[in-house]
Image 1 (spheres, rainbow over the protein chains, first blue to last red):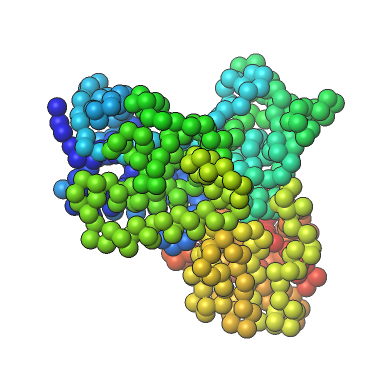
Image 2: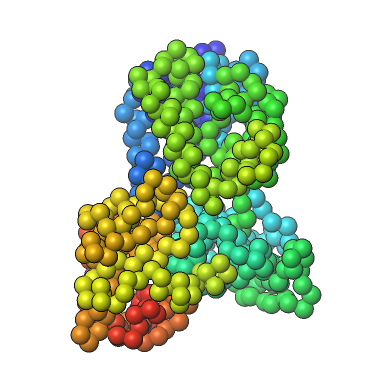
Length: 364
Length: 159
């Protein structure tokens, strides 16, 4: 059995950033990615990112992916990447079992950083399994990675940043966005994204959701209805929209199944997206030498995932005896960057979520 | 309402503009109403005319004395929330960000669009620029009727 220093599960923004800082510190790592290339969700983000320059603000996600990948490729002796490889088992003695195409591999690591990200939530409504009903992530992959149009027209469910951004990208691809539905009374994402859609003629319908889908073989129309303040459909407000695709963008849940396999302490924190591992300040779980970074420990923006990756890479390198030459300085810088990213009103959910996770329930 | 449909009120819009005498020269209008963690407008400004400060959640404040209306912030804003405007004798000249292909052409007459997405008149494309520095966000220079100062926001090509 191969024995490694650091194994990073997931080659998205958090995993790549962790590998970079580990390599800078002199620590070898192996990144395991189930997709055929690394970059995570960034590979389909054609829009410019927010944040500050340190997190590559104003750079398009697709180009941030290239930067982060090149950062690790700069250390060919220190970072190994396995693509099309899925971690199928994780054990308390830090043994991992991997499935690489048809091959089953067993490895052991001194430390593990789990950076598996998050998966899309779905929505329960009648006929939600009709072809033509997609998750927003699938639509973005089809369009922006493979160059395939999902449909001629679309209705988006959810006005968080993902729903708003994917709607804009659908318009850029030539798809007509007939409406964006939002169950809450106000728009969820940044208003600059909403304004961008509205000026292109897209209506955002708040307190509204999809009640039912209809169609013989594929989606042909949807029935929408207004919601009251208890989130119940208001009778008599139903309206029909003829449309061949419906895109669901109602939030993300951390992908924590590997953590359950080692029975790490978990906690349900709604603000962070659901079930998340209990971690200490060093991003270490209740299982010694198993760390987490990125959306797996709380759903946020990619900018935070990048910084969390750097942070965990720094910590693990020190733990394994490879202290980064600028350890103290970087430690403070990454902490300050995370605090800055989370300090505004849009960071409130994360702030409250982290307090709840740490058991500090005093109100802000 | 901004919160409900993405359309700011006239009062909100006017709060982002300088007094009209400044507009004899082009000035950047930052339509950023929220505290979101973002600061490229400030860090990209060659004239140090946009202030955000240490807390990147603070909305930008433009120093209209320093702003030259060069348009660098327009294509650097990830929210496409900045444009420049100048008052000429017989018209307004806007520089707006634009990311839909195919781009309109110089001299093309296009529809003028307000923040609600409605057609509010016609306008002329004076210049289309798309350099490497702009990273795939085109800048359209558009000649717009005087009375549309607080209404015009983008263009839509005629079919």
